Length: 349
Image (cartoon, rainbow, N blue to C red; front, side):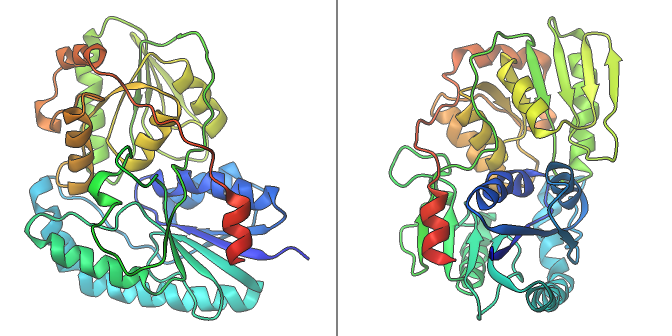
């Protein structure tokens, strides 16, 4: 009989869910039975991707951004008592799922309460150093203490100097069992002819996703070229709007998005880590606008700009003419072997 493996991504934007797609596919390919557990848009996305896989709703962290990014950290700190209660509810739900569905292993992508001391439990993260300004030491220590509850930590990156996550995923000292498994992407590169001059990819928590959407829809009205605009809003049905030179989608499924990225000359998006992994896999040129107040995205965007790979700017500073910088940068590319899921699963489950 196949082993039931619980896969639980955080509902924070869409990145945690989308990078679990290759993990779930690999589990199915190697004879395991994945069971998906999440909430909100992340759960809805994975239900669309895997309609025949059992899915379960977990308690929601309900984290939202502030309109002013500089206040976000303090909002999180203020929310800690509520978050701790939710994590306790998550632990209780996990225990019930394990008993009810005879779970043999857990893969948690940044869900703090989804683990068990009785079965192998894996934590996926690219942030072993959690940047938070003057409180980085505290947020990092807290995160690493949480990871200690798991048997292993899988880092979706490569070890060594030529990597994608920089200091986020490469701490100077660590006492946690870790494995650099290689970047996780649901996409495959195809040498397609470019049909789109620019692809806009949005996602992430509100209200910042909507704030950027409104800004870009105004800025791109005068863009000279064909634009595909994906809002990153997961809904029951796909919608398509034609707006002058733009075709606007609420969301795309993985096969459609893979095809669209491959057929697009340039990409404009947030600097979320999953997006960076996807664009590196597909060898794309891009422009990044990090989410205001999200230290991780601000660091990744700055690092890639300093390496002359991808230009970037602050959200309130973006102007249409800045997209011209893209052609002066190298773009993203990281040539690494595919993730060895067979060994990863076999050694743990």
